[in-house]
Image 1 (cartoon, rainbow over the protein chains, first blue to last red):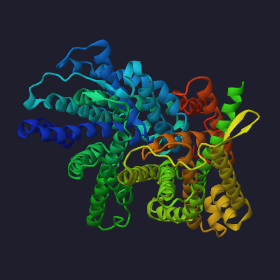
Image 2: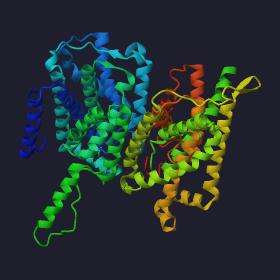
Image 3: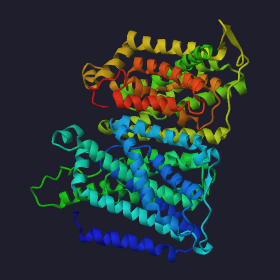
Image 4: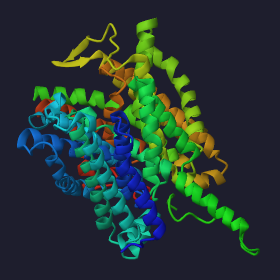
Length: 341
Length: 292
């Protein structure tokens, strides 16, 4: 079981207390809308981090599972019927579990290769799923897409149920990451990140461990996709399986600090409002694409380790400098999280 | 039978162009361990550039290649200096994936601003002409495209095997540290390697624009095909990439003719899954370098 520190508990309580109060304080729906997308990306980035940050396997295909979750939701509406209003939220855990199960054979194949090749395979997966969404038109409506009838929530607080659903998904992702971090599973994941061959040598069953992280990570992503689909109400292939969803999550994780607990969420809290503002200000989606890639390049070049590890480093260095004489002042403590060795 | 052979011919011709596209990708990986996810976007950029030269200045795409490749070579060198070199060596492989992906999005964004998202194609006067050999149709554009690709790949091969620069490149591919000890300027080789990769992408793009309609978003489809090809051929292996490209071209065309055109792009993914299950290091890749 994880260590529950007082500082951590206070931090979590303050953040989630503030997040829960937010839509009541700022009730204007456009503000809630931006906050909703911020939470969505906070959840996506945190889930991505479980695999990409902890085990070092960079997945570029998480948007595929976001799309599968979104389609799972929409297909239920069109083909099965799961009621309206709040009822669809109740099937979310099922969507998450279903996506995780679907991902197992995919993960088993993709995780046979390492590093760059894994990234390539997952990127390809993205286009497989998009192509499937186009081609299986009996199920997915092809390029026409699928519509989900909007629920009859009151207009003035329409976004709130979705907002809380996103907050719940984010909290779940964070809780899982927190629990994994100090667990044996986490240790094994970090060992894989640092040196997979050696980890295998000392008895880590690498395939199983990687597969668990992969399935949980994409299951959460699928759940968030399902909430998104219900909120948006209309999905089609390019929209539901969008490479920008992955790149967004990856970017935020890198900005905040890969492999840290709060880093991905911090990245989302900084970038998403900025992104929404840019989209609003620049209008044209093409310029928005340019802005996005520029921000990404700048972060990768100037701050490749992320905010939290960089701050921690600076703090440690200052403490070392102010420490007792005899302490090795020049040595910079190696970060325990963040960049893999 | 006739249909099958016709499909094989078409596939082989397309495979030649895929080989040109993939050669730059695998070269960049071999030299720098950089997977250039922006290769697809650079090909599409090449297609747009030659399209513009053709529609505005009436320069034939095959001629525009001569003008564009040196420029794009320089541009590639600059991109390498600015975006790839600052990455620390130990994390270059994984970070370069993200950086080049961001570059791909940037190029897509830029092209969308300039050209909007309509599909275009470069239609030359000989676009619809074809030869008839033993009852099989050979489209002129496709044959020229194939020949040009073969010519450039042969040039690339000559460059790698016959020149001092080529020897430095191959030394860097085999072992960057030893190459550096022997006096190879690895940084310069890497920059030139990236430039070469971009130059081949531009040439391939000019040809691509004549074969297939394209828009700024076409690079997604392209890059997933090309990545499948270089995984099949073995990352970093030029010969492997060429054979894999020809094979995939034929497989796709036959699948499209015999089974279903709608599902033909799945040929790539099916082959990719098979290769991951049977031989994860690719046909000609080695397991020793540890990268895979």
